Each structure stands twice: as C-alpha cells, then as structure tokens.
Length: 291
Figure 1 (cartoon, rainbow, N blue to C red):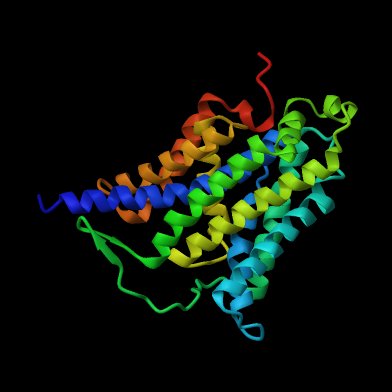
Figure 2: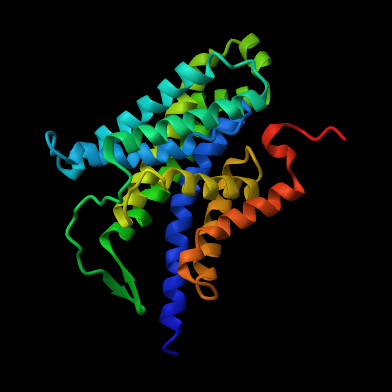
C-alpha cells in the first residue's frame, strides 16, 4: 500500500510532462500541416522562449514574473516570424529535403548564439522553492500547478483558433491545397505568418513552463525537439490532436520507464520510440514513399 502514492506520483509527473510535450508537438505539427515540412529549428524556439524570460527577469530589466512572461512570449513570436522571413519564405517552393537542411542549420546557429550570450551552464530563474501541495500522497509544486492550469488553457485556445475562427479555417485550407487556397482568395502569407506566431507561442509557453519546473540550458531545445517529434510521429504527422495524444503518451512512457530504468536514461525513451517509428516509416521526414 505504501507504494501506491509513488505510482500515483509517477503518473502525475507523466501527465505534467506530457502536457508540456503536447504543446511542443502541436506547434511542430501546425507548421507541418500548413507548410508541409518538419521544422527542426522548433526546439530552439522552445529554448529561446525560456531564455527570453530569463533575460526579462534579469538586470537591467528585472521585470516581475507577471510582466516578464508576456514580453518573453512576444519576443519568441517575433523570433519565429523572423525565422520564416529570413530562411523559410525564400525556400517556400523548395523540396522538403532542402527545407530540412535549412532548419537544421538554423537550429545550430540559434543554439550556438544562446551559448555565446549565456554560456553552456545550467541556469534557473532563482525562485524560492516552496513546499508543494499534498493530495492523496502526491506532491504538487506551484510550478506544476501552473502547468495543470496553463497547458489545457493553451490547448483549448488552439482548438478555438483552429476550428472556430476564420484564420483557423484558412490554415486548414492551406494545409489541404496551397495553390487552390490562393485562387480562392485566401491571403496565404498572412495565414502562414499566423501559423508561425501560434507555433512559436506554443513553443515559448512550453519552454517557460518546463524551465520554471526544472532549469534551462542551451541544449534543452534539442532534447525536447526529439520528444515533440516522437509525439508527432505517434499521433500522425500533421494531425493536431494526434500530437496532443502523442505528447501525453511520451510523457507517461518516460516517467513510467523510471520505475524500471535509471532516471538518467529517461530522455532516451522518446528517442527509442522515434527511431522505431522512423525505421517503420522513414518517408515521413522527406516525403511520401514512392515504392
């Protein structure tokens, strides 16, 4: 009986992690759905979103959390828009392999830029550690409570945008057929910009929530990109709600795996899942299978 709270805590941690991964995966699959390529620089949006909050809360700005978060998210959204304008818009008609190479190069550039500004060491936001809330033998910290509240709100907001707004309908139309959408009078560039802004905001929110609960470092984008990509593959590339389910599965899988393996290998769970799926369906990255 004493082990039951431990198992419940493990499941709770899995749901918390899965909620963040779902935000990452939904942003990743949103760009894939609209532009039909996997943005492997999405991890750097996650990382820079967390660092933008660190920048806003540090000297000389030293903003309180409630003011620093909107500024950090706005800067993340601008970074996503700049990525599209500088790199991906000139390659809009290129094949997906070219876009993949461009995204990987952009990822290296942004990661090394973060290391240049902040160094490679692990950092925290410096909040005082508060005692967590106890419930059914489980412990829930204020940061984890924020994840429980904010992640579903963001997911519901994506639902309203994607299925209840004109912009969302335009995004779905572009995902079906870009040329036909333009002929139908949809301003494609505006819709694509909206997709980048939403994707960047989801990455920024997820990165901030993750860093609040753990820490931040320049490599956090790469690790979480793998988890987001694995979640996207599980749910089906381009499937928004599949990405949500895939994120929850990855979060639960890696935390349940801790019951059997060392916690140091937890991040490898998503990598193993991703490799197994790619071995079965390698064409999801560079195009449809032709044989």
